[in-house]
Image 1 (cartoon, rainbow, N blue to C red):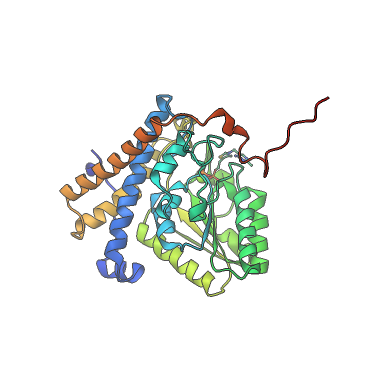
Image 2 (cartoon, rainbow, N blue to C red):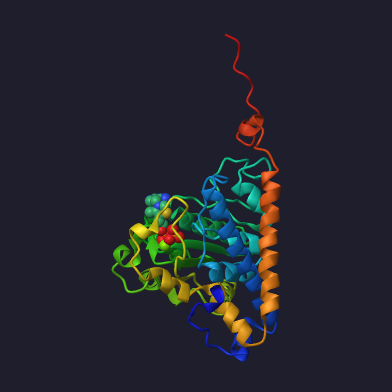
Length: 349
Ligand SMILES: Cc1ncc(C[n+]2csc(CCOP(=O)(O)OP(=O)(O)O)c2C)c(N)n1
Ligand SMILES: [Mg+2]
């Protein structure tokens, strides 16, 4: 049972949590915990449905919830999110409806992308969440371009560029970091170091000690932090965004965390992960760490936990039911949104 697992405890006091999150800290923590439970319920259910052949593909973000919820809560409406592979939860926390996301996962008629993108690649215009590019690292340059546009138009907001440890070896990482640094653009680089790029462990990816120190080569601040500690993630992201809004240079945050599932539904990590990885990962489970901290400080008890877990599960089940009751997109929609105006038929021969 999950409750019996050993986890690395979160050490701070209530006062330290207040100092990190502000006076509304109790509400922020409670809301973060609910979002994390929703993410867990979604990952578990979608992976099961993928195995049953009911959705085509799924990439879980189990183990990365603390960063995602923190980014969703700490960012502002005017910010833009350019995700790597596992930040769909950021869109949900920023206000993209769960039901719409699940329609996307089922590629049905109510999927905003009308079934034309792979599952887990939502675009959520209303919350400024750009569809991820599966091409590793390209979103880093895109985010820098968005930040350049914001600066030129004198608009408020920053771009949040998410990427994995593997992406720090991609050309776009270099181009993006360099360009942003030279122009001093409002972009926050968020590296989710889950220690794997599919089957390549991070120590085979790079010869540097931390990924954060790569930022120093571009003249930028780079900080590594515990990516399974929600309070630390929130404080770091809110702090960095605050500095960007005050016109200070871009920064990179490296979130050290643990990939707790396969790379995606197309992967079998038992073929390459060493014995003991799953236990180490589970000791850093961000949901359980926060949960234990809340229980020990009287912010959560067993019945409340039970109720919240059920609520999360029910929300996911309802969204799945609605999606399964929706048919596929009409064939005629295939050519919609492709041309600005419907092309006229070719002239008669
Ligand atoms: C340019 C490019 N090369 C290779 C791939 C194949 N690929 C897909 S995901 C991935 C690993 C990404 O690892 P990381 O950046 O650490 O992100 P994570 O999956 O761990 O979140 C690779 C190599 C790709 N999609 N694009
Ligand atoms: Mg990785």
